[in-house]
Image (cartoon, rainbow, N blue to C red):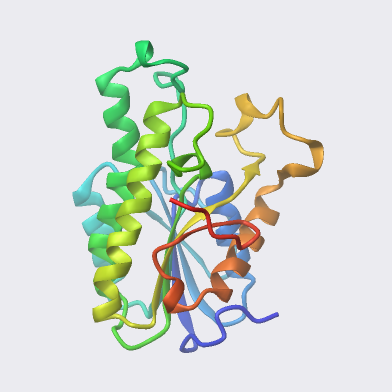
Length: 246
């Protein structure tokens, strides 16, 4: 199956967060995809999987100067696909809140910086590299828990709120870019529960068949993107192609 059949050939893709579980799986899948010229695999560490078309590079989505420098390095690339595969749920200093009593301003600010502001700044600097009259895709990993209407359990304040903010950013981008780049699809992607360090502490209630390997999740999400039309731009889609209500 040839994905993104309407793209000009050959085309370049950029994966932001290419050292992570899903990001590296995206890079590998795009490396094997007919029609890709180069896959720019960008991460804070500069690490990326090996591949004939994969070109490692550095980007720090918490540093706008770093994003601008990465965009400048891609200025001559025939860029048609941008995937932002970054995200922060927990680290040594940040854990999902079970109650409002645990809210900390610094933790919330960090979650928003990585999950919402970072992807927005990637769009600010990379969207100008996409030609105006050609099919293209800009997508970012989001989460079902960012849906306000789907929230039935509460908790996880910073992560939920920052992913809801990301969904709104993507919707705003889609509305604005529909006038400038009518063939561009902008989408949020919900990858399901993927076997990565991000989900590791929270898998106890996940059925065995529902836990996705990163390569499977990446393949499914690329298939979802390949089926989207510009009229569907601005939505949040799960790994099975379903539209998630805001």
